Length: 270
Image (cartoon, rainbow, N blue to C red; front, side, top):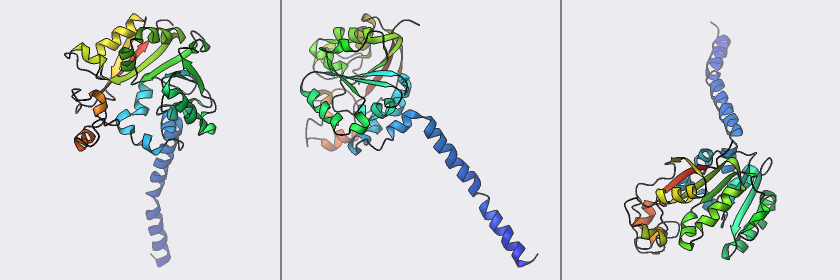
């Protein structure tokens, strides 16, 4: 075999592994393009400080569990600083509808500022003040209502029944209510729910079912076994609040954000 033939065979053999590798990259890109939630989570408009918290909040898995799709009409209750809005707005921008149902008060102006900072991403977000303007969301028109770490605030304020009724009324028959909140062990004193920021799963189920919802199921996506839910300043002892400031800071950072329940409910109907 002459030298030129040998060189040609060597080049051919070296090239062969590159074809499957290129195919793998193409498959990965196609998969990402086919997964709109993953694309929204990877949106370049998201802020670095919020992306850093994905390890605790698992947004892609959480939204997939709740069945959120880019063609839906979605309500996020109390988006406040906009953590999930950074994902939901690009996810729903082209083919869906996104209502930000924000309680009036100290976070409303801040959320307006958040939206105004990036109009290319947030121009289609429909900001609705709660409870004053809730009726502007038509009854039986929403596919999914989401609320992240807010039910404990409702319980402390005593307005949970009215708020869940509002969720029920705006959802289509068969629509989904997705709830994430800080989890209190069932054997703890229920009085802690008024002060600690933690709630029992049974409490949220009771609130939702009293409003007419059917319980669909739970996920452990946002669980954290390191959180014992018995901290000196309640859930705010842990990150991101770190209410104890420098006292045992490293300890609380090592624990991470709270142990959270992820519960899915359904409005009865087709």
